[in-house]
Image (tube, rainbow, N blue to C red; front, side, top):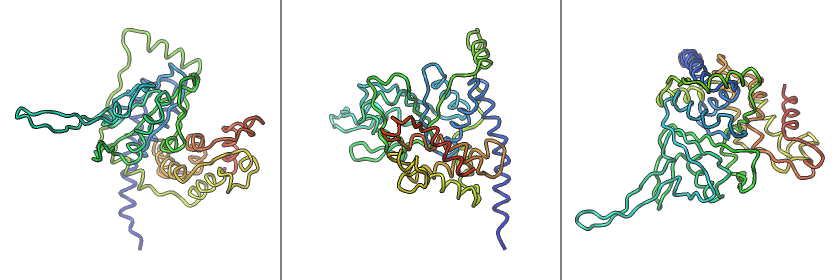
Length: 331
C-alpha cells in the first residue's frame, strides 16, 4: 500500500504555507503599490531558491522592492551599484596582508558584500564582463573561491539584479551563460492610473508605510524545501517538456521558431518551470500546480533564454509574440 502519512504531512505544511505566503504578499503589497504580478514573480523566484533579473525603467520601485522583500522575509540584504570601474574584489572580497604584534605576517580574508542572504545587483549590465562573471559561481554554487580557497555563502542566498532597458550606452549586455542563471526575468511596467494616484498620495506625505516582518531565514528554507516536495502531475510535466522543446530551433515543429530563433532555452528553463509552477500554486492558495501555471510562467522563464535571429527581427517578429504562440500550443 502507498505511504499516505508523508502526503498528509505535505498537505498540512502546504496549508500552513499558503496562509504565511498570503500574509507575506500583503505585507509587501502595502509598500509596493500596483505591482502585484511583480511581487508574485519575485517571491516565486525566492521560494524556488533562485535568482531573478528585474527589468524596468527608472523610478518603478525596483530598489524599493528588494528592500521590502528583505524586510518582510527577514533576510540580510546588501546592495551593489554596478559601474564600469567596479572590480570583482569589490563584490567577492579579497585577502589582505596583516602583520601581528610579533611581526609575523599572514593573510586575512575580508568578505565582500556578496556574503549576504539577499543581494541587490543594481544596474548589473553597467559593469564589465569580467566583473559580471564574478557573480556566476556565487549564483550557481553558493560559494566563491578566493586565492584557491572556497568560501561558502550564507543560506539562503538570492540575487535580485536590476537592469535599465532604456539607456544602453556604456552598458555590457549579460552573456547567455549568466542570463541562464536567473530563474526568471521580471519586467516592471508603469502602474495604471488608479495605482499611480495611490502611489503619489502614499509616498509624498510625512509618514510612509513600513513593512512588517513575516518570515525569517529558517522559515524560508522550510518553504523552499516544501516547494520541492510538492508533486507535479503528468499533464503539467508534459506541458513543460513540450513548451521547452518547442522553443528550440532544432527540435520544434513550428516554422517561426525553426527559422527565427538563433538559440533556445536549455534544461534550466524546464527546471525553472518545474519549481515555479509549484511555488505559484502555493502563492495562489492551491495544493497542486496546473497547466495554467505553466502558461503564466512561460514568458518569465523563457524570454531571457531565447534570442531571435537578425532576419526574424527585421521581418517584425517579436519574442513576446513568439512565446505567446508557444503557450497556445500547450493550452
